[in-house]
Image (cartoon, rainbow, N blue to C red):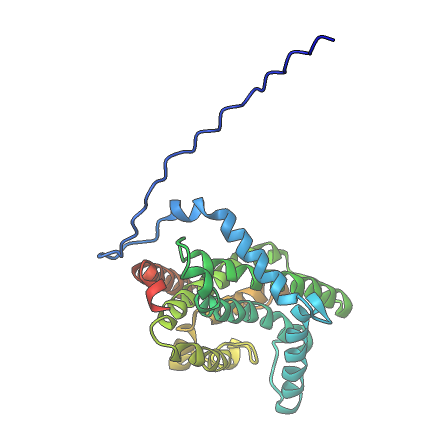
Length: 291
């Protein structure tokens, strides 16, 4: 018997590993805007964080996404009851529709600002272990509030149909005021999140500030009830006043926000958002040591 020749064992060469690159992260010594290119490179991490926040929000809940409409509906019932006993005018609109319509942009702003303000502390375990642009964290937290707003807005359309209220033609401009509300929330949320890393009192102050802010915004009452003069000037200093009134104008077609108030609101949003981005970038490189 002749022995069969032994087979040849072909060994594939191991893939060459790219050389390790050492990256040194140093704190910035000057004020500048965040590196938008770096944020774009981490866009996948942004969506992972946003989806994680959405899952955590509704995980193991009996009502699930129904919680997105429970808060505006319950608040609408309370405000409608108050308006009935206090005889608060609603510009000729049914109180239920008037209050629910005004609550949507306000809750979008309030929930997004609160989530963004607490976002850095909520991701403390990740921030202290690996580097990435920290601005991704508060920006991603705004997406959750935007999802809640979308669900509640569908209920608003159903409410308009139920009460026989025809939406105004300018309803197509709703995304403009939604974007303004998100930008306002992000601007103040960035300030809160950055200050929270230095002063823990800020996270306790934020809910109290939001409650006071609600009554300084024409949600429970129309802006026409304030009148003119210095009272109206104080109301116009609040950027959410023009945003809420503009949102009602888009949906219900009532009196539009005054042009000076709208210009002042947009200017305030730009200043707050720009200054918060500058300050947030300032503490970006050292936030892991302070958190």
